[in-house]
Length: 513
Image 1 (cartoon, helix red, strand yellow):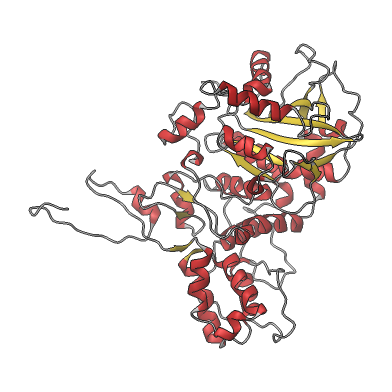
Image 2 (spheres, rainbow, N blue to C red):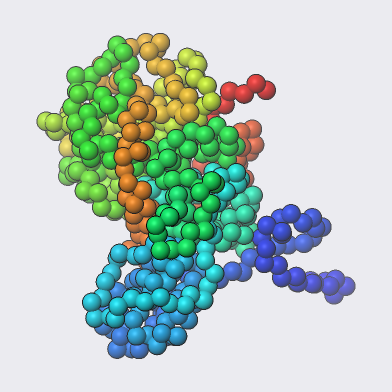
């Protein structure tokens, strides 16, 4: 309700970057009404209106509706642009035209469906401008983009929303606002993310696709690992160890899959090298019930689930359907990556890995504090419910079947770009070794895994929402972490953080202040 003596004026602006650069009186309220398809059922009803009923009910039509949701979810303009192309084509080759459309806008040709009954593919007119053709390496957006791609390398969940200072991603048609007050931005649309992954590669001079990427400001996916060191060093205020943890989850899974001995993955404390260090292991996922056993991860599905609460961690330990992944990332101030390895003889290792961002070697007092924070009883500390905490810790330490021996807990530090030295610490208990992540192994892997495999992994995860039906809005506790010294932007985020009162070492910085 507006008083009669006041006048309401509406100004429509389309450049989100300009909006935040302009200064207005506090009485001015911004709102975003960009429409989007976030519910699969709603999207199927909309697309079905343009299709012949007989085709909708056919097997090919049902697959087409699934693929339209898979590639078109997000802002309305993507779905409408595809439908416009289909109308111009007379709906003669819907599957092939959809694939051609994705290729025209992303330079990636989908391999998720092939219909032998449709005519040979041909060039189509695309009535929608191409998504961004690459990002300058000097751009302030580059570190954020790399974090997003790191996330999708391991997880199919929607990444944490960015705050309003990430509006450049909206201006570049990469991200979108998910609230009417323009305070949260997500990057979750399949075509946008696929195009980003393609742009972070050197252009192929022999390609028949127009090369509009500048080789001097683009960098290859193969060099991500080395690039992350430089970006973390120069963009620490934007860098989050969470995206780095997601990145490491992918390479940890690959290292285990390739049969790397544990001694090449971890560098153990020199006085506590375990007897199983030269063995290989299998990455396993929690059982679907309390009476089952851990089973080897088959490579299908997401690698990583994010846990914002103690209950989320327990849900992962219980093997709930929505969290049946080999890795669990706790969204605390100091993110911890939890996973389980199975050695020969049904022996299990529970790995608790912490990522630390530091320009120089972390000193001994901080390392000791960090190690205390990785103890299971500290990892899930909740002073409001100690009984619940004890139950979750018990699940963390013991396999589902009471007849099995307890897990051996391995506490691991992955510090970047500097290394954390553990040899000056007291020798840990025999059944609870401590270790560094062996960066040499992962640098080697980064140079050996083809860029095409990285791209396919990202595409698989960002399009995996088709199986879940509706994209859930990320929780407020996922709001991007503020720079050091600043309070969280959300009261709920502050409350969630209070549940995990670990020492804040994830953003250790050594600057000559």
